[in-house]
Image (cartoon, helix red, strand yellow):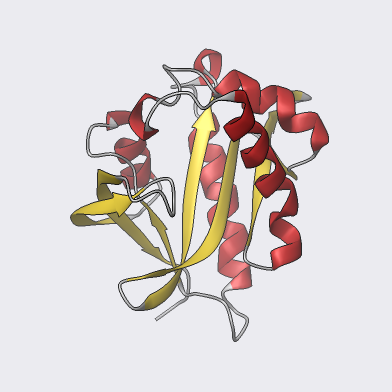
Length: 171
């Protein structure tokens, strides 16, 4: 499956609304209020200017089928990239997430060649999110084990997650 990753834009608000359902967000605390969702959209739009990450729309042809992104964060004393994704139900299980993940990893491997870029990418899916954990395995991540992970950041809410890691630089 050939997908394209395009930078998040104002037009992606409709996609974010389609993602913001109880079912799509069941592993991350449920659907957000309109105010929370609009704040998330604003953060996604502002990410590139921070130099710390970027959100992308996953396009199949001209259709928005999901989202994927990354951002820098401190994790266990190390500067890492963290990633997360969503694929709308009609395209789940069809390879869109794998194609988007592969494209993002390739992009970050190129970025990791620069002096100030982290050399690893982590994903922290809920231990109960079978599909996302399987995707991490398919993409070549190594399971480091379960951990308590604060989500959303700054909320004080801990989620039982798996810590998956992939090295972006050649040894």
